[in-house]
Image (cartoon, rainbow, N blue to C red; front, side, top):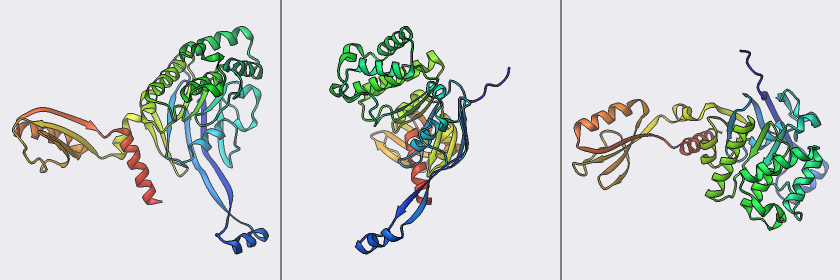
Length: 330
């Protein structure tokens, strides 16, 4: 079977911004009027990856890592400084109508609907912009409204919606033309836990129904864990990791956590590993990943154990340590 071309292809992609700089004070301000100095800032510093059709990939990194800049280049809002980028076989920067009708960019902190119009009227505007046939538009609109449990709120002006309701409307409006590729930049930012879960469920269902390719950024690891098997981790514009989410800890976290509940009292377990917590008869140990099975077997042999679990470090803790480690190196 022939291998399908990737929906998203990025090779040595770079984006450099030229920004003015000067020292503080009146003298420096006057001097800059005659001779302004600049420096180059690499927002994206030569990243490469491919995303296959129908794949949902998490794009992780701290603020300023280059995530949003990358999404803007992939959607054609920014021109790359150098490198190659193709989405659905097209150069995004050309902004061809046939290309734009197959992608969408949703930014959780940006309002794309008309503030004073009812949601339905904003949807109608999108129908006209994308030239969606009326019957197809109504069918897609009703499907999206049903999936998002939006109901009669479509008749409410956007400005009267809560943040969660507006985010649902934004996502529905961005998908009316049934794009094949979704760029989602913090789609659940500021939402409560219930609304975050509903948005995640909707994205997963849209991906399943339409085999859409999704590149998702989020600071909520619950979003990533629920939707993405693969993650790309970026820091200072460079890729630190590209692979399975489940294997992230294998590369960046060399320890596992053992939680053991003893039936023989408050025995000192520091000889087995680093004791990180104690709650009555339950002790939490941090041990080298390679030694976890051996330490667990030794505990079961040497003590009366009523409960024992071995866990990987939570992925959000792994990510936090990766970023902290890279920040100290910078």
